[in-house]
Length: 282
Image (tube, rainbow, N blue to C red; front, side, top):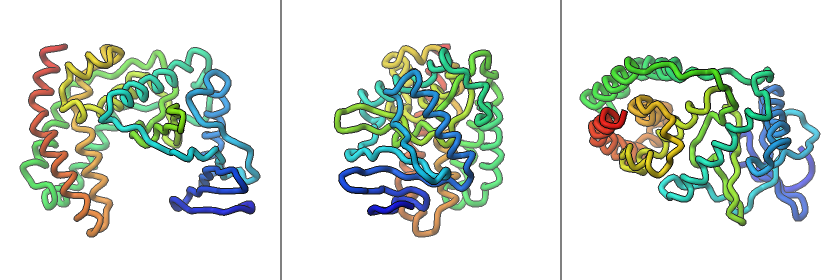
């Protein structure tokens, strides 16, 4: 790497300070992965510079260099304005399909949410021993049954209008600068798909902050009326978090479990009402 002061934040991410200027540097193991990020930014910059941070030239083709946002504040999905702003940013991203033919790119795979969740359920069932030990047999079976029942009633989402999807709408991928502007970062998991898929995944992220109240979620975000709400019944966040827990060390797991168990108990308590709301609204 070039001269300057480096602070390593992750195994492949650094903050680089050179004189008065600071940058984020991210290194990829495969050049095509870095090329994908450059391609996305080049295309989006042609139509909407407010969505993303610019990528700056760098001598190493495996590295992505971007301005460092000193405030670096992430959106918080428990705040109404952050939910509104993050969803609007996703709508802007999806609308780029009107000006950019994302399907011509060699970098993207098309997402199939039913297949993705089917594989997640299969993985969940392979980890039954871990789940029985840490979550308990009763709750494990309850989540398994919720997943099976919801998957059985899902209909494929039309793929007639494919666009770019960010692919990872966790709150820390929406970054706010010191002028309160929000940008999307980290397009590593970007893929092709119907915009509805990402609206579903975003809704899964924010539903806990609505106490799993589907009518309120839809009322506050009218654009979600186009979503197939049956997809919100799949216990996606529960399964994802518990499968993540299975990767932790014993020490990490002991620290993580109390919060995860509280999250799980609340979700399982509210799921029956979520199903009732869905049946009433559909």
